[in-house]
Length: 117
Length: 111
Image (cartoon, rainbow over all chains, first blue to last red; front, side, top):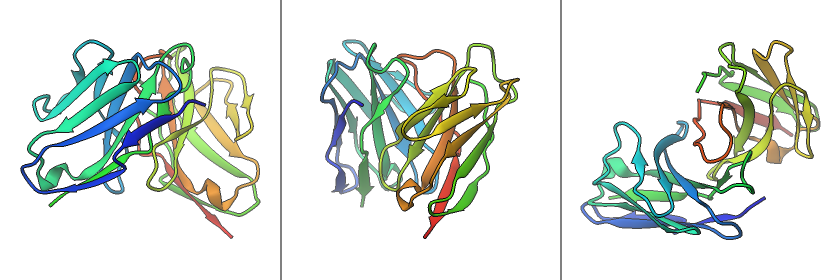
């Protein structure tokens, strides 16, 4: 399968600061990347879909001005949590898709655990 | 995407087979049945998928009911490393569409 990495794997920040999370597809060109959020003991919730070179599409209830997504290249997408608050503490996971490699299978990153104090 | 129903949790003894059920009574003719699993503190990983016929791969087998309203993921010999949350997901368009996760089944494996 393909490899998707995320950086950092964990981050602790103060309330009010911004945090950037990187998602990279290491061995294929990801035309589409997805960002998910997962709270403890809950399932993954889709936040947004980003296609390379175009604006991200956000799910209902996700603030686009708070969660900035950039997908400027076929191997990198970034999620910036702006003015983070304790309620933004969560496990953020990206996944990458790019035919034909991932036509049937989607490849997920290992996740980034964000803790906002 | 159509909804799936899975038991919240299941338990298995190590080295025994595990059958994880999934109901999807509103499945459409073009929905593929996908299974992913998520190990603790990791991102999900693909397990298997199918449309109508049963499928086998190195990780598991997928048995699909003739009416496609249910399916079963079969782990032939559970190991401690198989302890994870298993998600059954219907997807009508493969490729660059997102996976929509339900609650999944938490599988515990007892040594």
